Image (cartoon, rainbow over all chains, first blue to last red):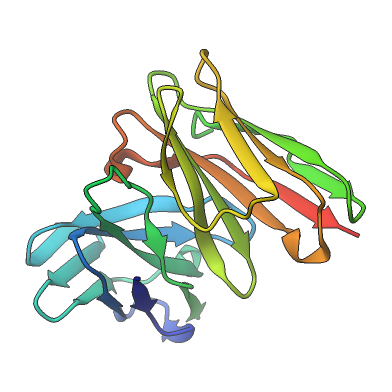
Length: 113
Length: 113
């Protein structure tokens, strides 16, 4: 099976930087995704890592270490609109064409003025 | 508007009943995924269809079934509903079955009373 762990809730200050960690255990790893989800809305894609290292996209960066089963999402210059849940998701290739992502329960990020 | 259309947006029904949720994927996308999101479980992968064929199954109950039609829209049928089935049901689509291109619909909120 697969197991994905991320903190339930984090609080940060507007303008600051926050790092949201995600650890996972899976076989046939084939990519890690980060999504943002505002309450009651659909998740929206933020980033995708399949190789080790850092992927930067504007204020958001995501890091992956496959050997450690570890990823983080780094958010810089925090804005109030960044208050949302951040979902870590893993894709595992079973060889049977299973492409569905396994999601963690999400980290609820609260931004304070 | 993400391009993925889900109807209805809200559904209230009684225990024991049957409902059908509908999803129209983004134009050009061949793959449809269904997810269930409840407060305590996070996003759970239910099932994937690719160009009309079932491709992968996740944690889908036997009371639930789905299909994808020739025009690529998909329906998720939930029967013998229980209180615990109350959740947000999301549909996502991608062009080639790779979740890198996932686009989520706005979801159907199902309340079983």
